[in-house]
Length: 117
Image (tube, rainbow, N blue to C red; front, side, top):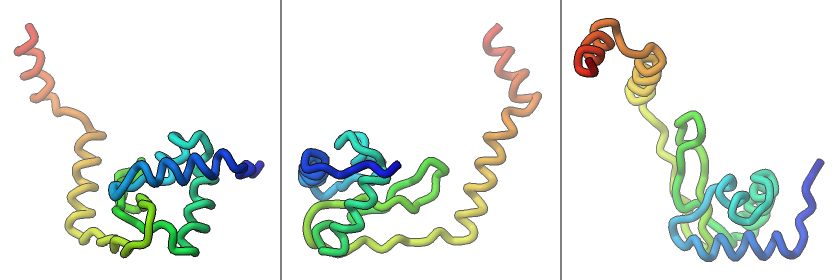
């Protein structure tokens, strides 16, 4: 079901965007502070961007650690260009995630146990 955008929600979104300043807010953050769904916030941001009322002030990390969530700031300004990660950066992040998922080695667990007891 699509949430209706009433006047109060519209004003809340505009107010929170103006209050955030140059730092900007992502659609998820905007939905939380304006008490609407992130989908409603996305639809409003699309309309505002089409009329040049907001601009992308930065790119934030999403839940999976990717840099692909735009943060919007009120006012006419230049959009910040999203810089793609290099292949080596992607590979390093992948190795870090695998290492964290694997957990500590037996030697590391035994060393930690000696410290505790």
